[in-house]
Image (tube, rainbow, N blue to C red):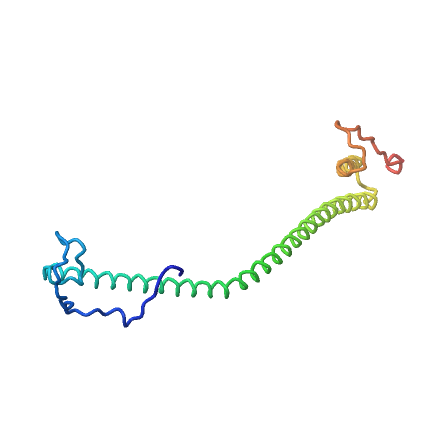
Length: 189
């Protein structure tokens, strides 16, 4: 606090009694010019009382200002101490937050890769399930008794063709392909 003079608390008190009157020597200036508290003989007692009260008020005001400034300085020091304590904690939390963000990003990438792999496995499972059903139907068709009519065989063969057409790798034509008639030679004899 450059430029502010701090006074002791002992200087705060001023005597409430009027200052002693100095003897006048006739060198007084006219109209009260140059009259101060030291020239008490020409000063009215009310005016003297006001001057003393004004001085006391000014001194109390300056003391209040100094106390307020001291209070603000103490608050600043307390806040600076709090910042000095809190700043390392904030740095640590920021570092931890950055590490957690990096870990979260890594886990999201792994989740995306696993999700894609899971979708591929599900598609492959569905494909294999369709192939299994087609092979099962074909096996049932081959194991069926000879007494079946040719119409039942043709119906089973049509179902088998419809299942196999949906599989990739088979010829997928837009229209219906003519279904050849399978004739069992054992039935004709």
